Amino acid sequence: MNPWIFLALVLVVIALALLIPRFRLKRAVSAPFPEEWVPILERNIGVYRNLPLSLRQQLRLLIKQFLHQKHFSGARGLEVTDEMRVTIAAQACMLQLNRRGALYPRLKYIILYPSAFVVSRPELNQAGVVSHGRKGLLGESWQNGKVILAWDNVLHGARNFVDGSNVVLHEFTHQLDSETGSADGAPLLAGASSYRSWAAALSGEFGELQKDARIGRRSLMDHYGATNPAEFFAVATETFFEKPRRMARDHPELFAVLQSYYRVNPGEWQ
Image 1 (cartoon, rainbow, N blue to C red):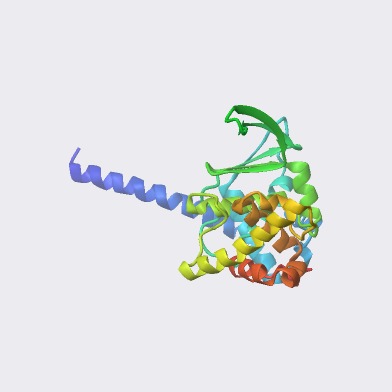
Image 2: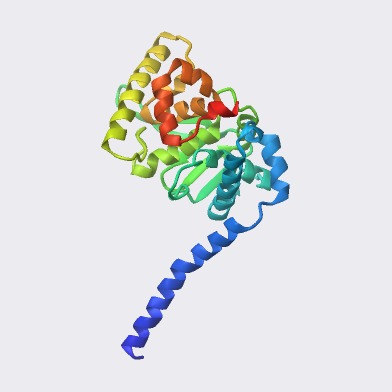
């Protein structure tokens, strides 16, 4: 074969490989929002009815994109339904409202368990001995493109969108956090000044939450956020979306930084 013809064929194949996924995504996003999904949102997403029309429309577009790009599978015999997919996609996409860029570009798979699942983790004791402990989890975020969730807790958290506990918001915050290459409590931000503001607001609040956890003092945010900066970011996000007015009142600097990052004010929805 003529080398120029061969090169042309290779370029055509590459072009098709790039264009076909874009065409399919555009077609999926431009398709009408399935009417049967609307009752799911109204029934399961606690603040959906309170969203401004512009945000509801934006959320629907993001849901269609999310469900086109991400693959769901059930574990322990669970059959994944549209209710599960839409309920999870809606909450995950709430973190992406008014924000540009790819939609969780590293994420490929969402694995659903019916309820809490047990994992085995290596644990190092004070003597330096490694053992494998087993613990039950409601959710987990991996940097290799997976999020694992317990459906019963997902549904409870979605419907009770005021208690500051939401496993989907929590685990998808970890996905945002890991877009920098490591989950360390500092996601991709605009520039150096943004990182300075982020560090100033979150480090002080993290220290206060650690102190609250250490002395057993009640706090607005769950004490699990005192584990490390990554968990603090995830817990702060749960509180920001589910207890926004109290966070704005009691932790105004933290609220302002999160509002700048997420580009929404959930206090207007409640």
